[in-house]
Length: 83
Image 1 (cartoon, one colour):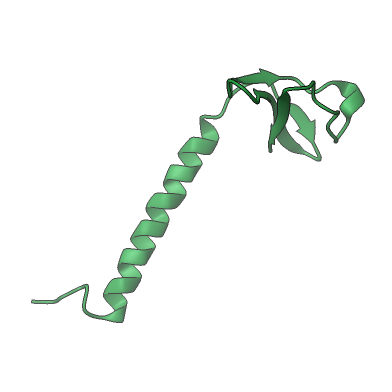
Image 2 (cartoon, one colour):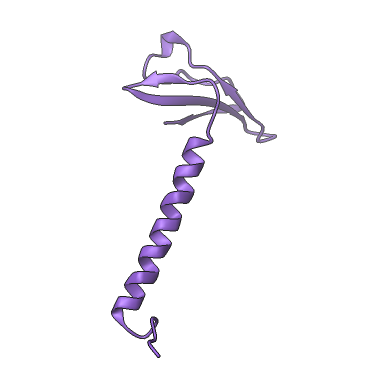
């Protein structure tokens, strides 16, 4: 009987299986992200405002005046950008 866990080849197989499953999981998550987006150097950019007290997350659309940067958020909030 061949033992896959006792040699280097078996460990490599397990690592490759884990890597494939992780890659598929990340790809599914990336495809399911939706919302209002803007363009950032050819990439999709999603902007959010996070309330510092309640941790409520609200999606917003970046204004054209912001360009590729971020303006200062209102007091009590933080900006979050997902690219």
